[in-house]
Length: 428
Image (cartoon, rainbow, N blue to C red; front, side, top):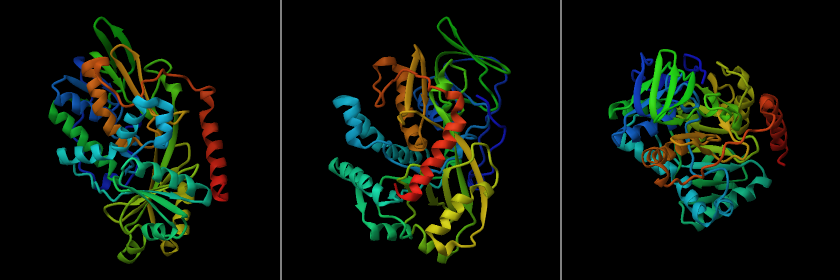
């Protein structure tokens, strides 16, 4: 797992509390569980393990939160990519309903954990709006809302006029409002998780890349630049930065850059006309655009970005121009920050949970829903690491399968994004 040694120039670092000390590993050590990846999944799993009295060590090649966990859009969205009926049809009468209940309850678990730990991360439960950009997509949004309502969820479908009132723009044909959703400062959240895990007894080491993983009698060893970690069990939670630590795992996901442009804080007049109730919003299109207003009144516009690291808003003109299309009163707004990071997309768009060997778990492919979903699954990962196969999981365990022509992923992603944007503009 390779990484830069500093955070991208995001606005989250302006408001987040300082990172807790996570010094590089300074020699060899032993642990019951070793976790590779200091993002939301790795740190939350470590927290649960440490609270259960399990000796746990987390390593990351950069500062915990330097990747997508601390640089994402900060949205807390319930559910998965697929509708409840389809989840139950694909995964059957036992696992299917459990998956629906679990996935749509992820935000409840996230807000509950934040409250329990007292993490200062600007968490706000303003709901999630899934908005329909075209007449074509309106039916799908309405159908998702219908299926959720049929299961007793606090969801409603908004018509065009109601959607305009909720967003401040007449651009959308309708929307699904899920009152369980919201948003937060993701870097502050990750730092809070790291601090809580350390306080519970976990060891967390930044600037400690995993160089090799080897089977040993009674467990596994992880080689790092400064020493070896001996552990009975392993969790790999590296998502968009997955490498060849476990052979073949890198080729099961496609790393995609997701980018965000942040504006200067909006003045009071502009704030009244943009997202008045402060929901998290994402568009129902082939290439999703997502946005929100943060705690300082900045507008954060996110979407697929250049397939390379960026450090200014200049490469994100398609997002900043689009903001002025949605809200013409924002013309002349100054955009102060632009950044991106790599998340992991799976070919089938399901999150992938693997058990490639006894005592080894891997969780990859959050598909853009990593904050709430990663938080919620961590409790089950921890229980699985403690109790083994006796511990129930509410996501399927699947065999790792390499994506064909994986080496061509940058070209493939670029082609898919360009084609999707054209179709979205045409409303097709």
